[in-house]
Amino acid sequence: MSFLKANAAARMSAPSPTPSNSSSGGAKRKRPDETPANIVYSQPQETGTGSHIYTQLTYAIEFLRTNQRWHTFKEIVDYLNVQEHDHHSRAHLQNLFRSPNPSNRIEYNEKTGLYRYRPKYDIRSAADLKGYLQNQKSAQGLPIKDLKDGWPAVNEEIKELENAKEVLVKRNQKDSQARTVWINDPSLMHQMDPDFANEWHKIQLPANPDDLRNKLVAVGLKPSSAKREAMASKPKEKKRKAPRRGGKQTNTHMANILKDFSHMRK
Image 1 (cartoon, helix red, strand yellow):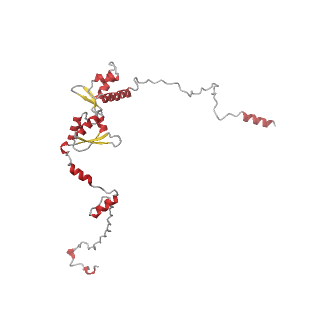
Image 2 (image 1 turned 135 degrees about the vertical axis):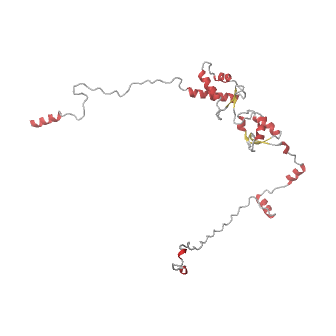
Image 3 (image 1 turned 135 degrees about the horizontal axis):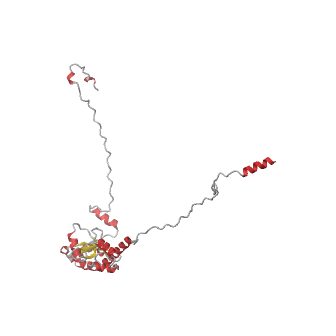
């Protein structure tokens, strides 16, 4: 039994396949630190300056839209509370105000150096509206909501133009608010003869739509409510192929030598 104990002791002292923490010299190896130290990177100054400038631009546009008149640059920056020593922000705002981009909502006058709000349509009064409608190439109407952007008193002045027969206005049925406006020529407005109007209103239409339709059919008129009759389309005739003719004859210079088989053609 002693040899069994010796073998068991040998197996117990066998080296492990995994490396130990101790080196061959007996010193323990240090584990690498899994939590790296906090590294502080240099940060740019004035973080968020760009978004701040464009926020100021939004406030400036709203200020000019509310106050529909020309303003100096000092009046605008004083409203935005931009300090005089902040030359960077002032120069940036001035470039944005004077941008030639068509989407820029701020209008700049180079002669006077003043600024004002730029609406979708350059219409700010009744005279501007009539001039715009008269000069446009089409008879398209203008939405009132777009005119109100640069003309706050559009509803009141539109009513005066409508009473003077200078414009045509389409209104909502619920609240009678003006929705669209067109140009109108007062010289084309004529008063209808009262006798003609009375005779016109004396004509009574049948209450039943079918009776009206029958009366139109009786006098030989076609009512608009008549059903459309589908036209029967004729089937297309197939084109017959022409009989194939013989090909071009060649070797005509040898006609006296070669034998003629033309009589054998089908």
